[in-house]
Amino acid sequence: MFNLDHITVLELFNLKDENKVKAYMNLEAAFDKNRIHLHADFVNRKPSQLGLLSYGQVASLKKYFANPKYETIYKAFDMVFKVKQSTFNGADVVDFLYSLRWLKQEINKIVEREIKMFAGDLDPVLEEAGINRLTMFGELNSLKELGKQFGIRPKEIADWSYNEVFSLLLHDKVQAEVQKRYNELKYGTTNQA
Image (cartoon, rainbow, N blue to C red):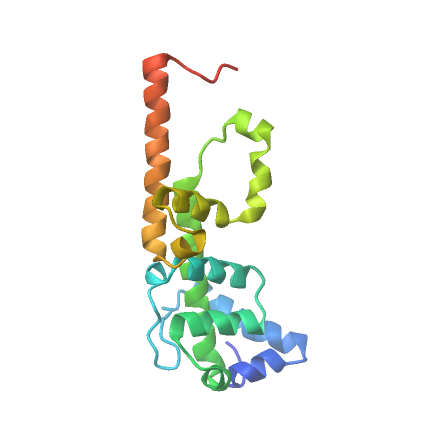
C-alpha cells in the first residue's frame, strides 16, 4: 500500500520534497482509516498517563499540537515519553508516526472531554458585559479562580495533576449550576428576557 523508506524522525522533518512529507503523513492518517491498532510506546518507552501530568503540561501539549512543528513535537514527546533529543531524532519514522497518532488521539480525547463537560449556555448578560474578552487568557482564567479558592498562586495550581484540576473545575461548575437552579426555584427566575 505504501512504498516508503524507513527513515528517521530527523530525516522526516528535514525532507524538502513536500510530496514525500505528504506521503508519510498519509501513512499516519491511514492508521485510523484502516483501524490499525495504535500503540503508545515510542522507542520502547511507555508514555506518561496524560491525566497524571500537571495541568500546565497538558495545557502545553494542547498548544504544541495546535501549531505543530519540530520543536513543539519534540517537546511533547520529551514530556510524555521522557526521550532525549538524540533518541527522538534517530527513531524510526513508523514508530514515530504510530506514537504521534496515539498522542494526538489522547489530546483530542482531553479536549473533547473538556468541551463536553464545560459547555453550557452562556449568560447573555455576561456576554453583553464582555466575558468573551477573557478567552484570550485561556487556562489562566481557571487557574486564577482555583488559586483564589485555595489561597495560592495560579502557577502552583498549574503544577497540580491535570485530573485533579479538571475534577475541581468540574465540581465548581456543577456546584454553580445547582446553586443557580436552587435560586431560581426558591426566588423565581432571575434572568427575565
